[in-house]
Image 1: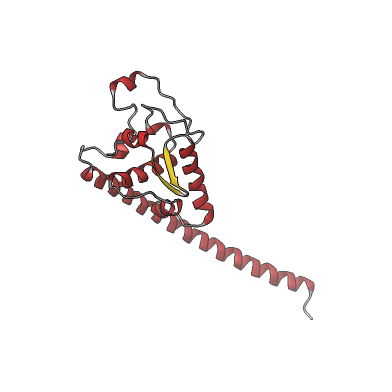
Image 2: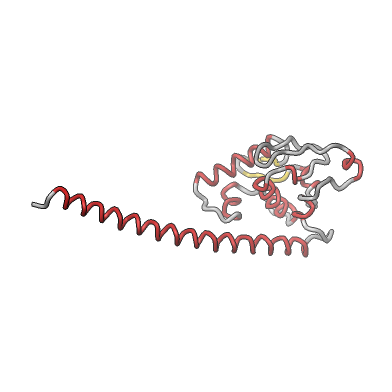
Length: 178
């Protein structure tokens, strides 16, 4: 019969091997994540370039959405309501630029603006998750749904059918979509 110390050493050795294996897997996943982020950035750049080519006005939605002020001169004189990053979504009003929103909300608006410009239908949150390179697991989809619902409540998006989102009429014109 093995000693207690011997059994503890065996369990310690097994635990150490498991920790080492998990560390190697974590390093592999970190490297894979870095590569995926790089690929995603390249696709985002490509999408902006294609948007520039397809946009009859010659500019792209991302540039217009991030512009510091609204496109018309009357609205330019009105004070902008700035939002702290990731803190709030202001109620949409004429002249309010997309740049007041955090990057996550801007990405949702840009994806829906592309669909609007190409005369494609609404998007579900699961489709948005896949477009953003996220796993379509409930936690990720529900996080996007929460953001989309917040944008609906503040007048940036419309949900004509449950779970299907499109740009609201005002932000669609503001963002440069036709």
